Length: 236
Image: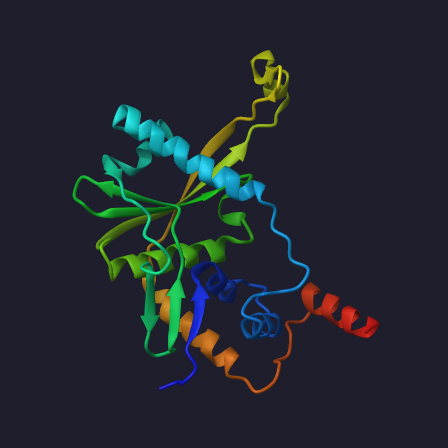
């Protein structure tokens, strides 16, 4: 059994599935426990994410149904409280890695099965989104974790893109202008993701293989991050 136990989030695991995945960059992030320097994440996205969930839950609480843009999932009978990170995780014994993550939404179907959703505040480009492999792994990781807990069975996965409405008709609409600022609307776009939890264990083993390398592996040809790192080292 591998002695050093690792932990990785569902989102970070998804990087392994990217077409431009770079082993060198990933090895560095693993050994730095993903605490990279010079990283700043704007808090506004966390605020929008929290507001999105409150909007959807408040509609259910007030009307006992979900907004019309979720009708494509059939009859939904409610939503489930999101488990804490200490509970919503799974240990993969073959790689000796804890897989963690917290889904944005868990809906309950009339047959008591579950739908796991992840909300994105971004322009919807469909499957052409370069980050789609990350999202697919992320959602399937949640499904795998959920199947070992109180979410069994998980029957569907989807991304819900909330795309800001910034066209000329919107910003010229007087009703969107207020004395204290302006209103920004969002359009929901649903992108269903294939349920394929079998993809997760091989990715965890790949993470273990990279971590166990005794030295930094070669980077992917053309990797911009590797180029920036080499330039930074050259300045020191």
